[in-house]
Length: 382
Image 1 (cartoon, helix red, strand yellow):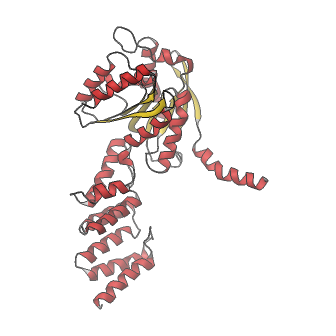
Image 2 (image 1 turned 120 degrees about the vertical axis):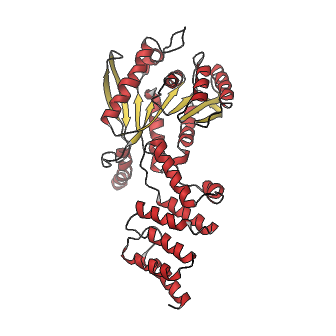
Image 3 (image 1 turned 45 degrees about the vertical axis):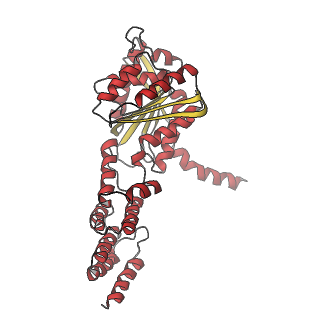
């Protein structure tokens, strides 16, 4: 029995370490008091000294932080989202005061104005000074705090790029103001909105009306997604909305899927190697990252080239592989396939043979590469 318990600890221990949450207390001049925050750093943050990470700021951190941080850790583990620094702001009994707006202008006032400045001018600056932060910021809120976070969109230069609105309790005029922002923005904005069929009726009504309005916005820089979860209450919709929002915001970040392979790679009119380069250029530009092209994505492009017989794409793919996986057989294999299929069997044979001194990778081994070279030799009588 003791051995089984020890084995369980050994198995679980790495997960516990990777998912640890730390607590900090930040003294705020704007609030005139201190505020407790929760922080989850990415796995291996300390080891990856040169890596920078997007930030996810979670309002209502008392109960929203754990589900958000858990899903970010899970999605990033499978590379369906980037690793992120997740910050939760505990609000407890102060959430109504934190979210306060006046009844005349419907803008943050009194404690609400102080909290607005605390987040934007103190907390986010503190995080940027202390951690390696990439220039992509996401904010999450629920009902009152979901409404509140939208006030940042009314600034000339919003500090957040993506907004996850969980059953927001919108202030008057918010729909009009946001509609104007979305029509005119010249900066990419991700906006996710969720309700449920059993949500609070007045909230559900205003959210659905706003969704109808947003469906009419004509601006390609707005990435808008809406969910109305069947059977979900004001509180249970949170568990469904968080993964849906992550899926939508980081859709392009994910590895090439079977759907992307079938509907895009096999149908695209541009070079397949160019498609791969554009995908990662977009990822790096949008999320402020320097993402290495995944090996599986190279292999998906390889498969697509074989399927479509677009042999010239192998040439540029080889150059990209040499950059991302130097000293391995990957670039050599793509170069050899290009030579082989474009009428240069002797050069292809010699290229396969070069792999003898290189590192194996994926299905590419020394035996495999030399076997390909021998097949060409036999077929052509060299």
